[in-house]
Length: 239
Image 1 (cartoon, rainbow, N blue to C red):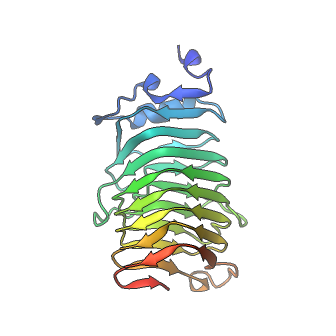
Image 2: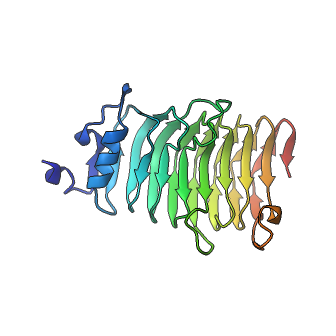
C-alpha cells in the first residue's frame, strides 16, 4: 500500500494518516510522508488545519510542499518547517504560530539552514514568535544560498523576514510585511526586494545589519529595494 502511495508524483499527506482537523497532532504523519517520498515529488496538503504542536516538519530532500491555502499550526518554540536540502519549493500554505509576543523566538515559519535554490510562493505567515521566514547560515561553507519568494504575506510575527550573513542572492517580489514587530532584517548581501509593501510594523520596517556582527565578513548587509512601499512603521522606516 505504501509503495502505491508514493509511486505518483503527487503524494497526499492524508494517505499517511494526517487528519487536518485542527485537533489531531499531524506532525508524525507529515514527517512519515516525507520520509517515504523521493526527490522532486510533491507533498499535497488538502484544505484543513494541520496541527504540529512542538514538532517541526523536517524537509531533508528536494521535494515540493503544496497546499490549498491549508494551514499548518505550530504551538511550540520550534520552527514549523526546517529545510535541510537544496531545491525545495513551497506553495499555497498558511503557517500560523502562537503570537508575536509569545517569547517563542525559535518559532520560525520556515527555517532554511543554509541550503540552496529555495522557492516560496503564495504563502501566508502569521503570528509567529520568531521570523516568518529565516534564512540561517548554519550549513553554509561559502556564499550564495539563492532563493525566490513571490507573493508572500508576513503578518503579526515577531520578525517578518530574516536573512543571516551569507544568505545571499535572495529575491522577494510582491511580498507584504505588516503588523510585525520588525518587518525585515537583512544581515546578508544581495537581497533584492521589488514591489509589495513594508508598513504598519510596530517598531521598525527594515533593519540592515552589517559587518559589526562579523568583522571578517566583507559582503554583508546590503541589498536593493525597488518599488516597495515603506510607510507607517511606528519608530523607524528603515535603518
